[in-house]
Length: 207
Length: 219
Image (tube, rainbow over all chains, first blue to last red; front, top):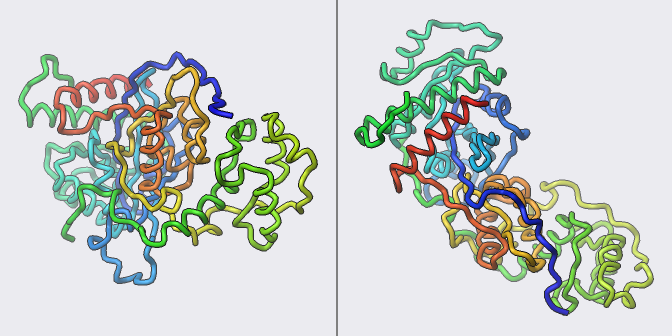
Protein backbone atom coordinates (compact mmCIF):
# COMPACT_ATOMS: atom_id res chain seq x y z
CA UNK A 1 0.00 0.00 0.00
CA UNK A 2 1.47 3.28 -0.88
CA UNK A 3 0.92 6.86 -0.04
CA UNK A 4 -2.22 7.05 1.92
CA UNK A 5 -2.30 10.74 2.47
CA UNK A 6 -4.61 13.10 4.16
CA UNK A 7 -6.09 16.16 2.65
CA UNK A 8 -4.50 19.24 3.98
CA UNK A 9 -7.16 21.87 4.42
CA UNK A 10 -6.84 24.51 1.78
CA UNK A 11 -6.37 27.50 3.91
CA UNK A 12 -7.06 31.05 3.12
CA UNK A 13 -3.82 31.92 4.84
CA UNK A 14 -1.72 34.37 2.87
CA UNK A 15 1.09 32.82 0.93
CA UNK A 16 3.90 34.70 2.50
CA UNK A 17 4.04 35.24 6.20
CA UNK A 18 6.39 37.59 7.93
CA UNK A 19 7.64 37.58 11.47
CA UNK A 20 9.55 40.04 13.58
CA UNK A 21 11.28 39.76 16.89
CA UNK A 22 11.86 42.00 19.86
CA UNK A 23 14.10 41.02 22.74
CA UNK A 24 13.07 41.65 26.34
CA UNK A 25 16.02 41.67 28.70
CA UNK A 26 16.54 42.34 32.35
CA UNK A 27 17.73 40.74 35.50
CA UNK A 28 16.02 37.95 37.35
CA UNK A 29 12.69 39.15 38.66
CA UNK A 30 12.68 42.33 36.62
CA UNK A 31 9.36 41.33 35.08
CA UNK A 32 10.37 39.98 31.68
CA UNK A 33 7.85 37.18 31.56
CA UNK A 34 5.13 39.42 32.96
CA UNK A 35 5.92 41.99 30.30
CA UNK A 36 5.78 39.43 27.53
CA UNK A 37 2.62 37.86 28.92
CA UNK A 38 0.76 41.14 29.13
CA UNK A 39 0.56 41.50 25.34
CA UNK A 40 1.04 37.95 24.16
CA UNK A 41 -1.94 36.15 22.67
CA UNK A 42 -0.57 32.89 23.98
CA UNK A 43 0.55 31.95 27.43
CA UNK A 44 4.29 32.51 27.18
CA UNK A 45 5.98 29.36 25.98
CA UNK A 46 9.37 28.12 26.92
CA UNK A 47 11.96 26.86 24.55
CA UNK A 48 15.29 25.42 25.43
CA UNK A 49 18.71 25.17 24.00
CA UNK A 50 21.48 22.98 25.18
CA UNK A 51 24.83 24.33 26.12
CA UNK A 52 26.34 21.79 23.79
CA UNK A 53 24.46 23.45 20.96
CA UNK A 54 26.73 26.38 20.85
CA UNK A 55 28.70 27.03 23.90
CA UNK A 56 31.29 24.32 23.88
CA UNK A 57 34.56 26.02 24.40
CA UNK A 58 32.90 29.37 24.79
CA UNK A 59 30.86 29.19 27.89
CA UNK A 60 32.64 28.42 31.07
CA UNK A 61 31.50 24.99 32.08
CA UNK A 62 34.18 24.54 34.69
CA UNK A 63 31.64 25.02 37.43
CA UNK A 64 29.63 22.05 36.26
CA UNK A 65 32.14 19.65 34.79
CA UNK A 66 29.89 16.63 34.90
CA UNK A 67 26.97 18.25 33.26
CA UNK A 68 27.43 18.12 29.55
CA UNK A 69 23.99 19.21 28.42
CA UNK A 70 22.84 21.99 30.64
CA UNK A 71 19.73 23.43 29.16
CA UNK A 72 18.78 27.03 29.15
CA UNK A 73 15.21 28.13 28.86
CA UNK A 74 13.74 31.29 27.53
CA UNK A 75 10.17 32.46 27.54
CA UNK A 76 8.52 33.99 24.56
CA UNK A 77 5.16 35.26 23.46
CA UNK A 78 3.36 35.96 20.22
CA UNK A 79 1.40 38.96 19.01
CA UNK A 80 -0.39 38.79 15.67
CA UNK A 81 -0.18 42.27 14.23
CA UNK A 82 -1.74 41.56 10.88
CA UNK A 83 -3.00 38.67 8.82
CA UNK A 84 0.50 38.00 7.60
CA UNK A 85 2.59 39.57 10.33
CA UNK A 86 3.48 38.03 13.67
CA UNK A 87 5.61 39.66 16.32
CA UNK A 88 7.50 37.49 18.76
CA UNK A 89 8.74 38.74 22.09
CA UNK A 90 11.65 36.83 23.53
CA UNK A 91 12.65 37.09 27.14
CA UNK A 92 16.34 36.59 27.65
CA UNK A 93 17.65 33.81 29.81
CA UNK A 94 18.60 35.45 33.04
CA UNK A 95 21.93 34.02 33.96
CA UNK A 96 24.92 35.54 32.33
CA UNK A 97 26.55 32.23 31.72
CA UNK A 98 23.83 31.46 29.23
CA UNK A 99 24.78 34.30 26.99
CA UNK A 100 25.50 32.05 24.10
CA UNK A 101 21.77 32.11 23.47
CA UNK A 102 21.81 35.82 22.99
CA UNK A 103 23.29 35.61 19.55
CA UNK A 104 20.25 33.72 18.39
CA UNK A 105 18.11 36.29 20.12
CA UNK A 106 19.57 39.45 18.66
CA UNK A 107 20.12 38.22 15.12
CA UNK A 108 17.57 40.05 13.00
CA UNK A 109 15.78 41.53 15.99
CA UNK A 110 14.17 44.95 15.68
CA UNK A 111 15.55 45.94 19.04
CA UNK A 112 15.40 45.29 22.73
CA UNK A 113 13.65 46.50 25.83
CA UNK A 114 15.81 46.35 28.93
CA UNK A 115 13.58 46.10 31.95
CA UNK A 116 15.28 47.70 34.90
CA UNK A 117 14.40 47.04 38.48
CA UNK A 118 15.54 50.08 40.39
CA UNK A 119 16.23 47.94 43.43
CA UNK A 120 18.76 45.99 41.39
CA UNK A 121 19.97 48.34 38.73
CA UNK A 122 23.25 46.54 38.36
CA UNK A 123 21.39 43.65 36.75
CA UNK A 124 20.77 45.87 33.75
CA UNK A 125 24.42 46.59 33.08
CA UNK A 126 25.20 43.33 31.37
CA UNK A 127 22.35 43.39 28.82
CA UNK A 128 23.01 47.05 28.08
CA UNK A 129 26.67 46.31 27.46
CA UNK A 130 25.73 43.46 25.19
CA UNK A 131 23.26 45.42 23.08
CA UNK A 132 25.64 48.33 22.76
CA UNK A 133 28.38 45.98 21.70
CA UNK A 134 26.11 44.45 19.07
CA UNK A 135 24.67 47.72 17.91
CA UNK A 136 21.14 46.57 18.65
CA UNK A 137 18.82 49.49 19.39
CA UNK A 138 17.46 49.29 22.90
CA UNK A 139 15.42 51.32 25.30
CA UNK A 140 15.22 51.02 29.05
CA UNK A 141 11.91 50.41 30.74
CA UNK A 142 11.94 51.16 34.44
CA UNK A 143 9.47 48.73 35.87
CA UNK A 144 7.35 50.50 38.43
CA UNK A 145 6.23 47.77 40.73
CA UNK A 146 2.91 48.70 42.30
CA UNK A 147 2.94 51.85 40.26
CA UNK A 148 5.57 53.40 42.49
CA UNK A 149 8.63 54.84 40.88
CA UNK A 150 11.36 54.55 43.43
CA UNK A 151 13.84 56.83 41.79
CA UNK A 152 13.96 59.83 39.60
CA UNK A 153 14.38 58.76 36.00
CA UNK A 154 17.34 61.06 35.55
CA UNK A 155 19.07 59.39 38.44
CA UNK A 156 18.41 56.04 36.87
CA UNK A 157 19.87 57.24 33.60
CA UNK A 158 22.93 58.46 35.36
CA UNK A 159 23.31 55.26 37.32
CA UNK A 160 23.05 53.24 34.12
CA UNK A 161 25.40 55.62 32.30
CA UNK A 162 23.37 55.50 29.14
CA UNK A 163 23.32 58.13 26.46
CA UNK A 164 20.77 60.94 26.54
CA UNK A 165 19.38 59.79 23.23
CA UNK A 166 18.35 56.40 24.52
CA UNK A 167 14.72 56.44 25.61
CA UNK A 168 14.17 55.72 29.26
CA UNK A 169 10.53 55.12 30.05
CA UNK A 170 8.60 53.99 33.03
CA UNK A 171 6.37 51.04 32.54
CA UNK A 172 4.20 48.64 34.43
CA UNK A 173 4.87 45.21 33.01
CA UNK A 174 1.50 43.95 34.19
CA UNK A 175 -0.43 46.47 32.13
CA UNK A 176 -1.05 45.62 28.53
CA UNK A 177 -1.35 49.26 27.54
CA UNK A 178 1.90 50.15 29.26
CA UNK A 179 3.71 47.27 27.60
CA UNK A 180 2.28 48.26 24.25
CA UNK A 181 3.49 51.85 24.68
CA UNK A 182 6.92 50.66 25.68
CA UNK A 183 7.14 48.51 22.57
CA UNK A 184 5.96 51.39 20.39
CA UNK A 185 8.66 53.61 21.87
CA UNK A 186 11.20 50.92 21.18
CA UNK A 187 10.23 50.43 17.54
CA UNK A 188 10.11 54.18 16.93
CA UNK A 189 13.56 54.52 18.41
CA UNK A 190 14.87 51.61 16.36
CA UNK A 191 13.57 53.28 13.21
CA UNK A 192 15.22 56.57 14.12
CA UNK A 193 18.45 54.75 14.70
CA UNK A 194 18.12 52.96 11.42
CA UNK A 195 17.66 56.20 9.58
CA UNK A 196 20.46 57.87 11.45
CA UNK A 197 22.87 55.11 10.59
CA UNK A 198 21.86 54.55 7.01
CA UNK A 199 20.81 58.01 6.04
CA UNK A 200 17.27 58.93 5.11
CA UNK A 201 16.91 56.17 2.60
CA UNK A 202 13.19 55.93 3.09
CA UNK A 203 10.98 58.73 1.82
CA UNK A 204 8.64 59.04 4.75
CA UNK A 205 10.41 58.49 8.03
CA UNK A 206 8.18 57.77 10.95
CA UNK A 207 8.98 58.87 14.43
CA UNK B 1 32.81 40.16 31.09
CA UNK B 2 34.17 39.76 27.64
CA UNK B 3 31.58 38.69 25.18
CA UNK B 4 32.93 36.11 22.85
CA UNK B 5 30.17 34.55 20.97
CA UNK B 6 29.68 32.03 18.30
CA UNK B 7 27.74 33.70 15.56
CA UNK B 8 26.48 30.40 14.33
CA UNK B 9 25.04 29.30 17.59
CA UNK B 10 22.57 26.53 17.68
CA UNK B 11 24.41 24.39 15.21
CA UNK B 12 27.39 23.32 17.23
CA UNK B 13 28.97 19.96 17.24
CA UNK B 14 26.74 17.58 19.05
CA UNK B 15 26.97 14.03 20.17
CA UNK B 16 27.63 12.06 17.09
CA UNK B 17 29.02 9.08 18.88
CA UNK B 18 26.92 6.05 19.57
CA UNK B 19 24.25 7.39 17.36
CA UNK B 20 22.64 4.18 16.26
CA UNK B 21 21.84 2.82 19.65
CA UNK B 22 20.59 6.19 20.67
CA UNK B 23 18.49 6.54 17.62
CA UNK B 24 16.78 3.25 18.20
CA UNK B 25 16.31 4.17 21.78
CA UNK B 26 14.98 7.52 20.76
CA UNK B 27 12.53 6.09 18.30
CA UNK B 28 11.05 3.73 20.77
CA UNK B 29 10.81 6.38 23.37
CA UNK B 30 9.48 9.20 21.36
CA UNK B 31 7.03 7.10 19.43
CA UNK B 32 5.45 6.20 22.71
CA UNK B 33 5.81 9.53 24.36
CA UNK B 34 4.70 11.80 21.68
CA UNK B 35 2.02 9.85 19.97
CA UNK B 36 -0.76 12.27 20.32
CA UNK B 37 -2.68 12.20 17.11
CA UNK B 38 -5.07 9.35 17.35
CA UNK B 39 -6.91 9.97 14.18
CA UNK B 40 -3.81 9.76 12.06
CA UNK B 41 -3.65 6.70 9.94
CA UNK B 42 -0.50 4.70 9.93
CA UNK B 43 -0.43 3.56 6.42
CA UNK B 44 2.59 1.59 5.47
CA UNK B 45 2.79 -1.86 6.99
CA UNK B 46 6.20 -2.55 5.50
CA UNK B 47 7.69 0.39 7.13
CA UNK B 48 10.08 -0.79 9.79
CA UNK B 49 9.53 -0.08 13.37
CA UNK B 50 6.42 -1.26 15.10
CA UNK B 51 4.33 -1.10 12.02
CA UNK B 52 3.43 -4.75 11.98
CA UNK B 53 1.41 -6.41 14.61
CA UNK B 54 3.94 -9.06 15.47
CA UNK B 55 6.61 -6.54 16.09
CA UNK B 56 4.30 -4.63 18.22
CA UNK B 57 3.31 -7.48 20.42
CA UNK B 58 6.92 -8.37 20.78
CA UNK B 59 7.73 -4.89 21.82
CA UNK B 60 4.83 -4.75 24.13
CA UNK B 61 5.71 -8.03 25.72
CA UNK B 62 9.28 -7.04 26.27
CA UNK B 63 8.43 -3.83 27.96
CA UNK B 64 7.88 -4.31 31.61
CA UNK B 65 5.79 -1.80 33.49
CA UNK B 66 8.83 -0.70 35.40
CA UNK B 67 10.43 0.46 32.21
CA UNK B 68 8.19 2.99 30.67
CA UNK B 69 10.67 3.76 27.94
CA UNK B 70 9.22 1.48 25.34
CA UNK B 71 5.61 2.33 25.55
CA UNK B 72 3.33 0.86 22.97
CA UNK B 73 -0.09 1.66 24.14
CA UNK B 74 -2.00 -1.26 22.80
CA UNK B 75 -5.40 0.25 22.99
CA UNK B 76 -4.29 3.17 20.95
CA UNK B 77 -2.57 1.04 18.40
CA UNK B 78 -5.69 -0.99 17.90
CA UNK B 79 -7.64 2.14 17.54
CA UNK B 80 -5.26 3.38 14.92
CA UNK B 81 -5.27 0.12 13.13
CA UNK B 82 -8.98 -0.01 12.75
CA UNK B 83 -8.65 2.81 10.28
CA UNK B 84 -6.63 0.79 7.86
CA UNK B 85 -8.43 -2.29 6.73
CA UNK B 86 -5.52 -4.37 5.53
CA UNK B 87 -4.07 -5.20 8.86
CA UNK B 88 -7.24 -6.09 10.64
CA UNK B 89 -6.47 -9.78 10.89
CA UNK B 90 -3.34 -9.09 12.85
CA UNK B 91 -4.96 -7.10 15.54
CA UNK B 92 -8.51 -8.33 15.49
CA UNK B 93 -8.08 -9.33 19.08
CA UNK B 94 -6.77 -6.77 21.45
CA UNK B 95 -3.31 -7.63 22.58
CA UNK B 96 -3.61 -8.42 26.28
CA UNK B 97 -1.01 -6.21 27.77
CA UNK B 98 -1.45 -4.59 31.10
CA UNK B 99 -1.68 -0.86 30.66
CA UNK B 100 1.64 0.81 31.04
CA UNK B 101 1.59 4.13 32.76
CA UNK B 102 2.55 6.83 30.30
CA UNK B 103 5.89 8.24 31.27
CA UNK B 104 5.54 11.54 33.07
CA UNK B 105 7.24 14.63 31.77
CA UNK B 106 10.59 15.21 30.27
CA UNK B 107 12.78 14.80 33.33
CA UNK B 108 12.18 11.09 33.30
CA UNK B 109 13.52 10.79 29.82
CA UNK B 110 16.64 12.78 30.25
CA UNK B 111 18.87 9.84 29.57
CA UNK B 112 18.03 9.87 25.89
CA UNK B 113 20.48 12.10 24.15
CA UNK B 114 18.48 14.89 22.60
CA UNK B 115 20.04 14.55 19.19
CA UNK B 116 19.10 10.88 19.05
CA UNK B 117 15.88 11.72 17.24
CA UNK B 118 17.82 13.45 14.52
CA UNK B 119 20.14 10.54 14.02
CA UNK B 120 22.91 12.49 15.65
CA UNK B 121 22.81 15.23 13.06
CA UNK B 122 23.06 18.79 14.27
CA UNK B 123 22.95 20.79 11.06
CA UNK B 124 19.93 22.34 9.45
CA UNK B 125 19.78 23.11 5.75
CA UNK B 126 17.84 26.31 6.14
CA UNK B 127 18.49 29.53 7.97
CA UNK B 128 16.08 28.86 10.80
CA UNK B 129 15.90 31.78 13.16
CA UNK B 130 13.92 31.64 16.36
CA UNK B 131 11.13 33.61 14.74
CA UNK B 132 11.25 32.02 11.29
CA UNK B 133 7.77 30.91 10.37
CA UNK B 134 6.97 27.42 9.19
CA UNK B 135 3.73 26.33 7.61
CA UNK B 136 2.44 23.03 6.38
CA UNK B 137 2.51 22.78 2.62
CA UNK B 138 -0.73 23.51 0.92
CA UNK B 139 -0.55 20.47 -1.33
CA UNK B 140 -3.68 18.51 -2.07
CA UNK B 141 -2.27 15.26 -0.77
CA UNK B 142 0.67 15.12 1.55
CA UNK B 143 2.27 11.90 2.65
CA UNK B 144 1.87 10.98 6.27
CA UNK B 145 5.40 11.21 7.61
CA UNK B 146 6.92 8.26 9.40
CA UNK B 147 8.49 10.20 12.19
CA UNK B 148 6.16 11.28 14.93
CA UNK B 149 7.91 14.62 15.31
CA UNK B 150 7.21 15.42 11.68
CA UNK B 151 3.58 14.58 12.17
CA UNK B 152 3.45 16.97 15.10
CA UNK B 153 5.18 19.67 13.07
CA UNK B 154 2.68 19.26 10.23
CA UNK B 155 -0.21 19.37 12.64
CA UNK B 156 1.08 22.47 14.41
CA UNK B 157 2.01 24.39 11.32
CA UNK B 158 -1.37 24.36 9.65
CA UNK B 159 -1.33 27.88 10.91
CA UNK B 160 2.15 29.30 10.63
CA UNK B 161 4.34 28.71 13.65
CA UNK B 162 7.79 29.90 14.53
CA UNK B 163 10.79 27.68 15.05
CA UNK B 164 10.72 28.57 18.74
CA UNK B 165 7.09 27.51 19.06
CA UNK B 166 7.76 24.20 17.36
CA UNK B 167 10.67 23.53 19.70
CA UNK B 168 8.41 24.33 22.65
CA UNK B 169 5.61 22.07 21.45
CA UNK B 170 7.95 19.18 20.69
CA UNK B 171 9.72 19.78 23.97
CA UNK B 172 13.09 19.43 22.32
CA UNK B 173 16.03 21.82 22.41
CA UNK B 174 16.20 24.40 19.69
CA UNK B 175 19.03 22.74 17.82
CA UNK B 176 17.09 19.50 17.60
CA UNK B 177 13.97 21.28 16.41
CA UNK B 178 15.97 22.97 13.68
CA UNK B 179 17.13 19.65 12.26
CA UNK B 180 13.65 18.18 12.43
CA UNK B 181 12.15 21.19 10.68
CA UNK B 182 14.88 21.13 8.09
CA UNK B 183 14.12 17.49 7.36
CA UNK B 184 10.42 18.21 7.11
CA UNK B 185 11.13 20.99 4.64
CA UNK B 186 13.47 18.77 2.63
CA UNK B 187 10.75 16.18 2.24
CA UNK B 188 8.30 18.83 1.14
CA UNK B 189 6.02 18.66 4.14
CA UNK B 190 6.41 22.25 5.23
CA UNK B 191 7.38 25.61 3.84
CA UNK B 192 10.01 27.77 5.47
CA UNK B 193 9.01 31.40 5.21
CA UNK B 194 11.60 34.00 4.55
CA UNK B 195 12.89 35.84 7.57
CA UNK B 196 13.78 39.48 7.28
CA UNK B 197 17.15 39.47 8.95
CA UNK B 198 18.73 42.63 10.14
CA UNK B 199 21.40 43.66 7.70
CA UNK B 200 20.65 41.63 4.60
CA UNK B 201 18.13 43.99 3.17
CA UNK B 202 17.97 47.40 4.74
CA UNK B 203 14.82 48.45 2.94
CA UNK B 204 12.97 45.31 3.91
CA UNK B 205 13.98 45.63 7.52
CA UNK B 206 12.82 49.21 7.68
CA UNK B 207 9.51 48.35 6.07
CA UNK B 208 9.10 45.55 8.57
CA UNK B 209 9.63 48.01 11.42
CA UNK B 210 7.03 50.32 9.92
CA UNK B 211 4.54 47.52 9.72
CA UNK B 212 5.26 46.39 13.27
CA UNK B 213 4.85 49.94 14.52
CA UNK B 214 1.49 50.44 12.89
CA UNK B 215 0.44 46.99 14.01
CA UNK B 216 1.32 47.80 17.62
CA UNK B 217 -0.58 51.06 17.45
CA UNK B 218 -3.66 49.21 16.29
CA UNK B 219 -3.53 46.75 19.17
